[in-house]
Image 1 (cartoon, rainbow, N blue to C red):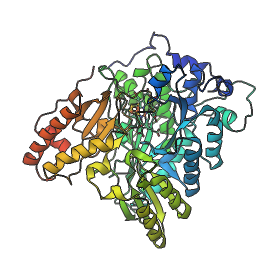
Image 2 (cartoon, rainbow, N blue to C red):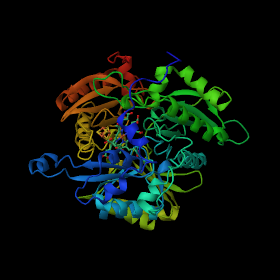
Image 3 (cartoon, rainbow, N blue to C red):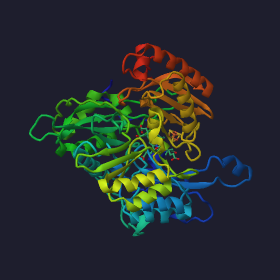
Image 4 (cartoon, protein in one colour):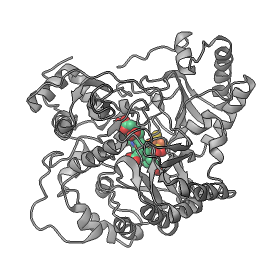
Length: 568
Ligand code: SRM
Ligand code: SF4
C-alpha cells in the first residue's frame, strides 16, 4: 500500500469541469428550465440538477416507440427529498402524497436511504413541485450529486430514548455537511440572484466532492441502515453499566464502505467499511467533516468509477487514512468499543415504545406507495395522515413506521390499515417481508434488468421452493437490483440478483443476517430457470444439513460452495 501517491496525471473527469464552471451549482439551469422547445435540460445541467435533488430521466418503456415516431424521448424528472433519519409529520406526508397525485406519476417511492422519490415530473412542473415541498419544509438539496447524501439513522423508536438522540445527530450531520451555496433557493424558491462570486464551501470545497458520499448512524443490535455500506458510519455505543444506563456514550467510527461496482470490471467492487475508533458525541461533527475533507482532498477526480472513499482508502491503506485523520483532528481516537448486531431487518406490526406509545411498522413492497386494485395504499396512508398525531418514519428497508401513536388511537389506525389492505404483507413469509428491490425499469437510466417490477413474481417462485422443503418460515434476505450499482444494497443479502440483461442476473449468495459480510458470485449471467434450479439444490441441502438456527448464508460458507472473491 503506497502512502506517497502524488496527484494523478490524468485529466479531470468531465463532471469536474462542469462543477468548476457552475458558479456554485447554478450553471445554466434557469435558462434550461425556461427553454420551451424541449422537455429536456442542457447536458451540463443534467449533472448540476442532481445536486438539487433531481435527475432527468425518460420513460424506458416508451423509448423505442418514441424513437420510431421520431419524437424526443419522454423526458421527465425524478425528485428525491433530503430527509435525515426519514422522519415526516402527517402534514408533510399529505403534501407529498398530493404532489405525487397532481404533479408526478401518482405514486410515492420510499427509498433505501429513508427518503421519498417522486417520478415523472415534467419540466414545466419542476419549480411548482420544489415549491410545494418547500411549503411543508421539505427540501431536496444534496439528495443527489457529489455531496454528502441523505443521512440515515436507525428508524425504530421503540427501544430507547437513544433513537431520538441518534435521529437528532442525523439532522445535525445533514445540516453541517450540506452545501452552503444558495443556488437551490435562488433557482427554485426566491429567485434572488447572486451577483458576486459563488459562496464559500468550507467543507465540501468549491468543486464539491469527487463523488457521492454517504453517512449513516446505527443503533445496535439492529443494523437496519447497513452501516458497513456507508462511506462514513457511526455505531451508537450505549452506557450499559454506568450511572446512566442507556445513555449515549459515543460512536464507533466506520469509514470506507460502498457497494457500487461494474460487471466485468474487478477494479470496481463493493467494500465493507472499517471500524477505526471510538469518539464521544461532542467530537461527532468535527470527525465527520474531517473524514469528508480528506476524501475531498485525496479522492480520485479523474475516474468516477474509482472516486469513492473506499478506493481512496484501499489505494493508500487504512493506516494512512487513520494517520491523516488523527493528524488533522490533532488527537488519536481510542479503540472501538464492543458492539453486536443481531439483525438487519425491520420489526413489523405494533410495538410498544419505552414511553408507552405505540409504533406500527408496515411492509411497503419495494417502497412503492400506490393505489392499486385491491390495495389502495396511497389513499389509505392519506387517511392515516389525516388522523395521526405522531409522525411517519421511513426505514432503510423501504418500509414505513406509523410512529408515536397513543393507545386510544391504535384502533382507528388499525381500521384504516384493514380497509386499505395495508396490513396484508405483515402476514406473509419472512422472505417476502424482508426482500428489497431497487427502482430499476422503467425510470432508471442505468437499469439492465427488472427489479421492483420483478420482485413479487420472483419472491413467489422462491416461496414455492421453500414450501417444497417445508421451510416457508425461515428468515432469509433477498435483494434484487437492475444493475450492479447496488441501490438495494444487494451485496449484503443472503441471496441477491444483480441485473445483467433483460431477464438475466448474476446470482450472488452468502451474505449474513446482520449486514457484516459481503456475498459472492455463485453463478453469473443466468436466467430465471437456472436461478431457481441453483436455489432449489441448495435449499434441499440446507434443509438436510443445517445446524440448529444456522442461517442460509452461513450454511453456504460452511459447506464450502462459495469462493471468496479476489479484488483486482
Ligand atoms: Fe442508487 C444511481 C436509485 C440507493 C448506489 N440510484 C442511482 C440512480 C439515480 C440512477 C442514475 O444514476 O441514473 C437511480 C434512480 C432510479 C430511479 O428511477 O428512481 C438510483 N439509489 C436509488 C434508490 C431510489 C433505490 C431504491 O430503490 O430505494 C435509492 C435512493 C437513496 C436515497 O434516498 O438517497 C438508492 N444507490 C443507493 C444505494 C444504497 C444506499 O445508499 O444505502 C447504493 C449503494 C451504496 C453505495 O452508494 O455504495 C446506491 N446508485 C448507486 C450507484 C453506484 C455508486 C458507486 O459508487 O458506484 C449509482 C450510479 C452512480 O452513482 O454512478 C446509483
Ligand atoms: Fe438503477 Fe441500478 Fe440503482 Fe437499480 S441498482 S436503481 S438499476 S442504478
